[in-house]
Length: 115
Image (cartoon, rainbow, N blue to C red):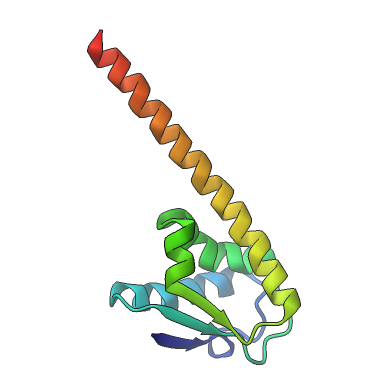
């Protein structure tokens, strides 16, 4: 497991641009097949847009389950965890909608080619 100290990337977990910086650090670890531990020691301010730009991207790209397996959060406050979970749940809902749209498209395409 590769450990990423979030405070080395951003002093606060607030902005979309800092979230994108964290996303790059996560991507590098995942490319190596590693799981990632995000250590939030020293971070006390959080915003949903930070998590949307960083981890939410992986929820929609991989899947909620795979994201939860590969990315771990440690030393995060209750406020930070609540903010993260809000972002995670939103991204999970979007992922589910995408899956449903793909299934509908497949069924429609199958019906068109069968006729």
